[in-house]
Amino acid sequence: MSRFLFVVPPLAGHVNPVVGVAAELVARGHRVAWACADPDLVAGLAGPAAGEVYACGPAPRGERPADLRGPEALKFLWEWYLLPLAETMAPGVRAAVGAFRPDVVVADQQAFAGALVAERLGVPWATSATTSAEFTDPLAGLPRVREWLAERLAALRAAIGDPAGTADPRFSPRLVLAFSTPELAGGGPHEGVRWVGPSIAARPAVSGFPWEWLDGGRATVLVTLGTANTDVGGRFLDVCREVLRERADRVQGVVVDPGGTLGPPGDDKDVLITPWVPQLALLERVGRGAGALVCHAGHNSVCEALWHGIPLVVAPIRDDQPVVAGQVVDAGAGRRVRFGRTGARQLGAALDAVLHEPGYRAAAARIGTVFRAAGGSSAAASHLVDLAGEFG
Image 1 (cartoon, rainbow, N blue to C red):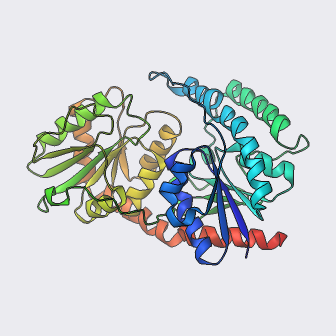
Image 2: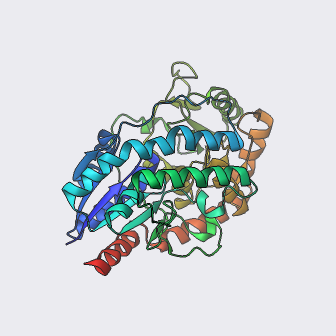
Image 3: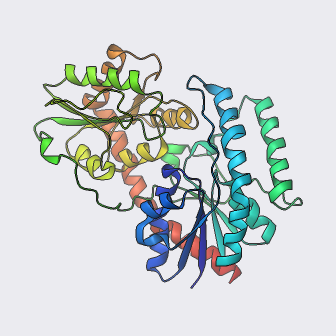
């Protein structure tokens, strides 16, 4: 029996992919624990697989300007969230390692404290890459940003890691678990990367979604911008609602609006406005009914849609989303629109294309087949067990 400590940022999109891996390890008789700035988030998402959850935080609470884009948005993400998060998590991660005594630390690619603390304490560590954006060199063509980032990571290593270390905390030299495949992320060689595909695990059942509202005679189009974009999504969601109403003779829309930006839900037989959806269960139905997903190109949403063979319209907002959106388009599985400027005509044309031109659905189905063959949580767990065995 081996012990695995998962170090994750307090972001659902980074916890969900490894929940299935943790559950698989527990099923094989191993022990798992977690270190996170939001223990309640981990406990709620992981359920019985959570085990011990160690608090590491608090997380930074800066408000990001809604109009930031491009290099400035990337720099803000690093300077005001990722780097401070590593500093605040480090004491808790050290305490978790001391208390749990893991054989392997599994550090999320954006939870640098996991990698650097493990390095300093001499514990083997693996990387959990829950987005494929880093494999495409997002800083290509931005030499000043790359230099600035290298300096900040060096200072962070001096503060919480091993000053003599050389490994990039985003890429373990021993094992990188990539929750995608080259068919979506691109086929370039990456030393130590194991492409395990999405880790699609069952999530706790939540009642209250009006399944009876769905019309089996029309394709369902799901619109979601994730939970982290409620501050900027109102205009885009309103355009989506307009487009869906114009096509009500052949599609039925479900629009996720957690911030209530579209006003209170009304009695609408064509567009359901709801603060939440059971996304995996709903995507399964969308896929069976030849529907589509309109989203922000969040990596989890994209992979979950493609897993079910669903083509996409992607409207990236920030962070890794433009990179993931480009991967969807390059793979032939969707169309891209401009989040801040698209109108009903442009969005409608993109939606019509992915719904009615067969090439998009065929590409999505092909990627879904590859995803399923990659092994997911089972393959990831096997790689981690092998790594632990090298040092056992």
